[in-house]
Image (cartoon, rainbow, N blue to C red; front, side, top):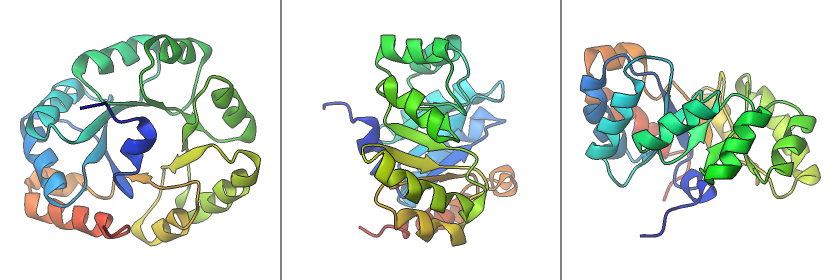
Length: 211
């Protein structure tokens, strides 16, 4: 099967859960709970010692899911994510070294931007799928709307402080098909291994863009 582009991956889901994994033992069950709820694209952040093991367990449990790795800050982080099998990478920003590594590897990548200048810098590197961060709830929807006429070829995925009530304002924009958020997998539900509850939240997230 031909690998999906990043834009095709994002189009698979209206909400991309952002996951912090402290215990990889439950990663496979979590991935299955999300997929059971209709969410097949999610990001595991590289902020804990268990993140790489969790990513690998999720990929094995849900092979059709597109699972990325986030908080990639350096070329070394990018290489770690690639070797772990991540389908794409995510970062809060973009440095020249990281941009060069993305170009060299052709790894699908979602770098963070917060200004028009940063959009221009990423776009000059051929990166046209960008994370708008921090979105600060619904506040970022107007910014993304304003960018549509200036950068009509850029697709934004906002993250940071977005709650369910904010999502329709984003998904109504032509240059935003996906939002990121951690609310789909609350840490208390994950700690309790409440897979049914997480599946229900995934179904709620999926419903923002019905099939």
